[in-house]
Length: 354
Image (tube, rainbow, N blue to C red; front, side, top):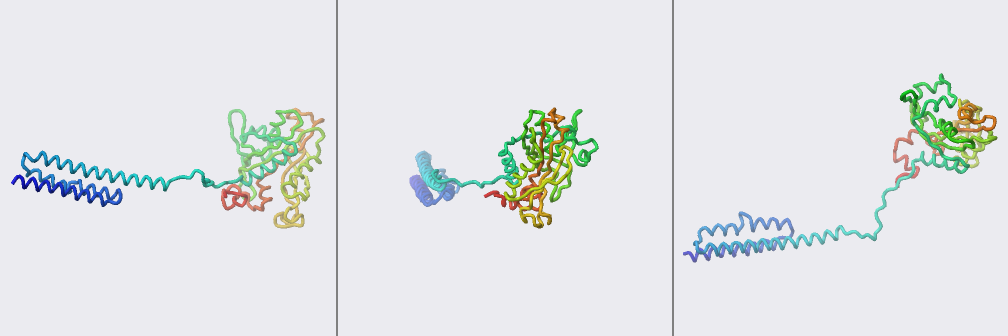
């Protein structure tokens, strides 16, 4: 009877081995192999059922049958491990093929942007003045009120000094403002050097303006200053005529109209002949044939005296222009706020992302 039980249990183990090897062999991927492992080595496997038969085997046979059970389990585990290594090697090879990088191929070029149209305009204007022998100067946007107003011959009762027009920042005994113009740099530059002085000053300015199609509370300005012996209004007109023609067209005429600024005397506004209609009148120039571009004039003697220059020996001219207005005129933009809205549909017209 014990021999019959021995033979029966042995056959169960052999059957579990053959069945397990067959199930493992038929697994076609790692997922199927995981299911096969549970099927041949789990609690409900044929091997587990065969092990339960050891309880009825004679004591003298249990040792050899236990060794057989361990051998079958070891063989099945080895088969699973070998199958798994094969799948992993195949998957690794496929991944290498799938993710291989040919370093000799050109890479994907990133999208390229371009200069903002206002930056392009500022650089173009500055380059023109550099060609005329001017140097570039920069100064603080938070400025002393004495430089922004007092040194520029702006009286205490002037409307521009009102808090309704100017952003004030008070600190200690000195009064500070967000500069309303780049003109304070006229004083700072002249204080720092003796004549001759030829500088152009691009920078940001701030005023308490209601923003609309032609006004901004934060805007860009380009200041120009020339101080030397014998400078006249003819030098001013000739310099600005060259700049206007470089920007709007080489055959356009310019004119000076009398105006008033506290820090220039005489003062003028410079108009350029309409680049669209050539003076005949159109919607761009409001049927006038001329377009106002900037304010200018001869440096007021008060400024020269403030910095200690000899007003009998030296004279000079100054001007201030708004790149937003110039860019709008040059490109036919009706609303200068569009330059600050960062709408790519608008900016791409000037060579944006490509």
